[in-house]
Length: 255
Image (cartoon, rainbow, N blue to C red; front, side, top):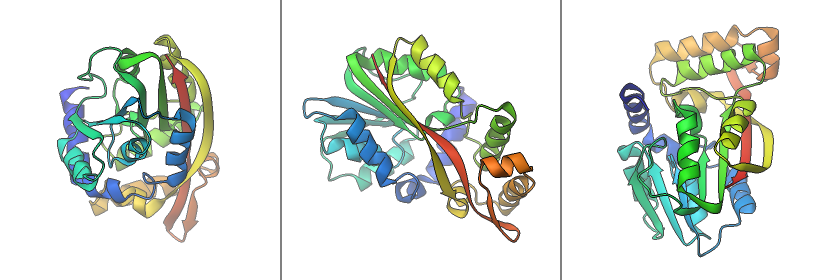
């Protein structure tokens, strides 16, 4: 990541570290159950969770994997998460850049990354690092928000995400992720796309406290054309927004 982008990420997540621990989106039980179901972690495994945030995935993995490394670029976020999860003795915390991991090659039985890659400015480097640190036959499971295949809807989605969160780099299309994963010799074995409905107020206030910015985001969404409003299922109540819906991709790949 560029120094400017790294600093923006640190600033955003240091400020909102507690809200990511309590976020209903990030603590979604069905997500976490699916990670365990797809990976089937073993007690002999050493697993890496990249950009752990509030630590929800690391906590889930620690129930069945022997050792879990939870990494995050933001030390304040990681410290807060470690304090919340201090009872989970098999989780180790490392401040780390997802695009430049401080681990040797072929170290991990599985690598996970959930609701974070849209913050990474160089997703190609991220996937390269994942492939490098995975053992042969190791598994990579990623869950993230993805942009629609339609270019106009892609631009609309990434525009309002960037307005709401300056640390947002870009949500890629599924086709772009598939290309990167295959380019780094990982084989996709399972994938699914699902629609994720977000409570607007919780989503907005998690990263935005400035009323002017909050209003700008709201006005942008209220001006959505018919195609945009339909695709993102923007539910309005008067001049406010209650919920909207985005695409989330879950993918499992093997080295």
